[in-house]
Amino acid sequence: MKITVLGCGAIGQIWLSALARQGHDVQGWLRVPQPYCSANVVDPQGNVSNKTFIANDPLFLAESQLLLVTLKATQVSPAVKNLESVLPDDCPILLLHNGMGTLEELKGMTQPLLRGITTHAAMRDGTVIKHVANGITHIGPGNRKSALYSNIADTLHHALPDVAWHDNIRAACWRKLAVNCIINPLTVEYDCQNGALRAHAAQIEILSEEISWVMEREGQSIPSDNLKEIVFDVIESTAANTSSMLQDVRAQRLTEIDYITGFLLRRARAHGLALPENTRLFELIKRKELHYDRERIGAGLPGT
Ligand code: KPL
Image (cartoon, rainbow, N blue to C red; front, side):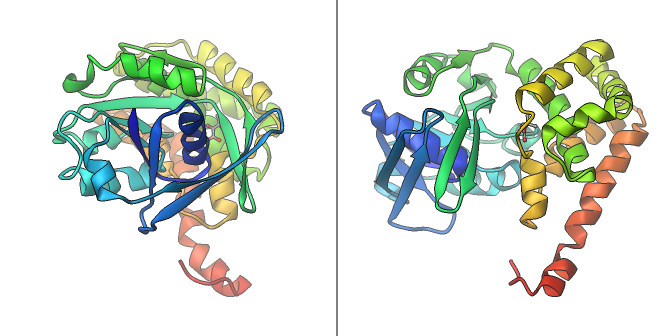
């Protein structure tokens, strides 16, 4: 299959090398155009794979049978809209990112949209991508045109298992959103790895309760105790992780807060609900982002 991977960060590089290993014809697509991109990945067993791929080839893009988008939520819409006119009309676009709200931004797209979330854990270490832990990628239809593309789950599963198809992917997205609304900003507040959140059970309980109110109104009902259990399971299974949001804050990059807690608060507002603790965390992260520049100047770091 001919596949373009848009976004060549940690998750993008893992997919590029896994798909190429499976015999697919792949190219990378970088927001700052380059003729080549490399995937330098150490898998969870310690095996190293270092490959170079062609990148930003419009002819390849025009023949692609899948566009796999591994950008952060904040970058997805402008980057995807930019490729719309070159991509074949029937080329499915799979959005793989934390948070929600991009499907709404891409509502008018010609191509079929698929939505996915993944629990594969990967991080950049210098020029190397460490695929820290295998996980599951859940995918499903993101618009009406994409319901017939469940075969893509099979193709992707053979390259980087596990991949599961869900007719109702929104339910899986909401559960992942709930986990990210709790773990990501709290790790920033306490500047800690995920495991250290075990000490903040009371705060997690309040956040779970607020989120469960919104999920109920959204038709995704889940008792707040179950939500809390899911969050504690993730805290245990990712105890040694530095959350993506804390990595962003430490590197003074824009976080995905607008698509995580921001999306939750927008839905809460639509239902007339107030979520004080989630609002406080949202504002805390926004304040951190606002102060990046000053900290950069203070630390003598170059601007973005
Ligand atoms: O998805 C994550 C993230 O860091 O963004 C969690 C589940 C919190 C794991 O670190």
